[in-house]
Image (cartoon, rainbow, N blue to C red; front, side, top):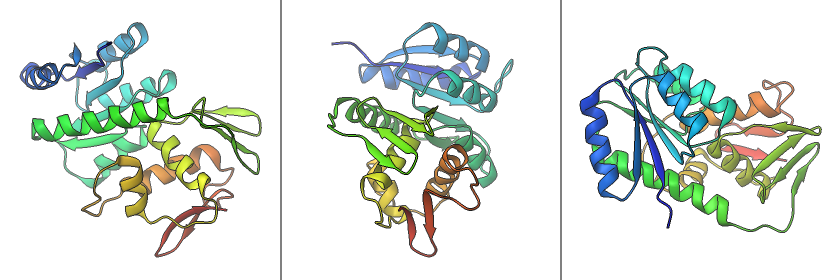
Length: 228
C-alpha cells in the first residue's frame, strides 16, 4: 500500500517538527520545506497528495506559492497563518486553498482536517460515473474530474469541483451554505463564516462570463445557491 505523501512548508522548524510527528504517527510520509520556493519545487518533482502551507515565509510567501501551485496542480492545500483578520482568511481561500487554520492551532484538529481532505480526494477518485453533466455550454466529467466551458478546459480546485458537481447534479435545487459545507467538507457546519461564499465567488470567476450577473451559479437571497 502506497503511503500518502504530505508536504509541510513552514519557516518555523519547531512547527514543522510538531506537524511531522503527528502525521508520521498516523502513517503518512512527510516532506518538509522552509519556504514557498522549496514547496513549489517539491510539487514539481514529487507526487504529493496534500500540502500544508504557511502564509508568512521567506523567499516566496505562502499566498504566492499557493497561486503558483494551483497553476500546475489541484493537490489539496491547507493554509496556516498567525493573522486572524477575516480578510486574510478570504485571501487564503481566493488563492485556491481548500482549508485554512489560524495559529496557534491544535495539532489534532489539523490532523482531522488532513484526513478529511484526503478522504474527500480518495472518494472523488474512486467513484465511477456513467455520464457527463451538461448544463448549457458547461460540461462536467465526473469520471475524469474535469470541466470544460465552451470547449475550453477550466482548472478547478478539488473543493471547487465538488461544489460545482453538487449543484450541477441537482439542477434547480437550492442548497444553503450549511448544506454545501456539510456535503463537501464532510463535517458539521457548526459555525458561520465566509468559506462557502468565497469558493462560490472563485467558481464564478472561472466559469461565468460576468460573475456579477451569473449564468450558471445563481444566488437565491436568504436561502443559498443553485444551478438552473
